[in-house]
Length: 76
Image (cartoon, rainbow, N blue to C red; front, side, top):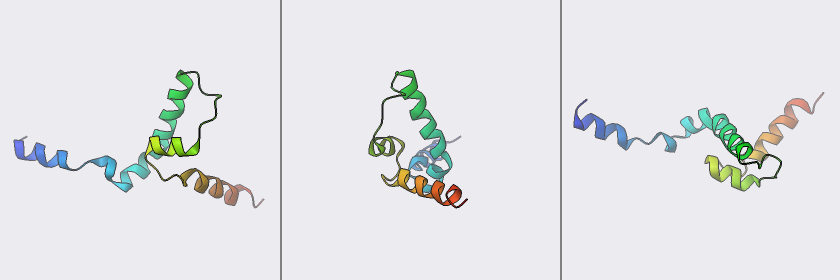
């Protein structure tokens, strides 16, 4: 690999790519829950704004998940 190729690849930060974030959001959530479990905080409530900030998603993300669940399972 030449120096130019290495420099070019480091300019593209995958964490700023919306598609990449969407593909890995479940993994980020699982990691945050795992960390809280290891710290003994698994039974302590966490504000949705803090979780969303840690995983890099909109603060309305959790609300949209709840609406999605309600629409999927609430119509039975």
